Image (cartoon, rainbow, N blue to C red; front, side, top):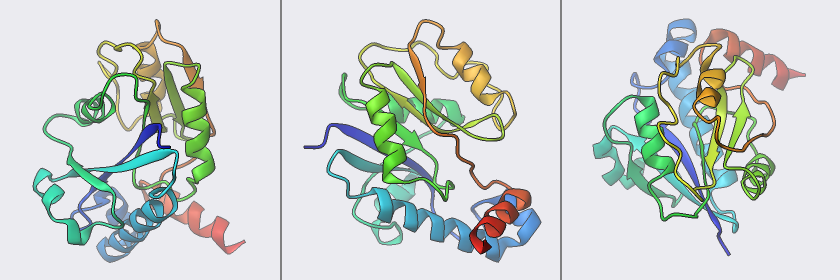
Length: 200
């Protein structure tokens, strides 16, 4: 029986419109190939687990109605307007109360079912769970949704070494758990690290 929601935030896999920072380092074609391949592989690995329902929270909003370009049979919802924090909060709190929700990005090559299971397990006793990233951010966040968390992403310095620290500062009244540290791929250095590890 499915007891939680897994949200994968994703941008429509259109050439030239994804991973623009990475594209500056490795070229638009390689960046698009990496993004599309990783998105499809992530949904394939995580999308059919019996313990959670997988939902793609997509941008641009109109792409939530273009099912043929998205992998698998995951439900599609629009990210909506606002900065990244506003859109994440909309996803994390947009389901019925008491349903735990875990949210990840679509650029974490090493994420497995085991990582997601750990996050949902942590929400059995914590209000919030984070999967720290090696750059000071986080690749996963989850809410137990037993009680509201006020302004969880207020004044967060996104895409910085303080992103996790800033977000945790907004949750001083919440019980926080951490799961495994993983890395996303945002730039050429991250892409090179991934390529080096996979050649070993």
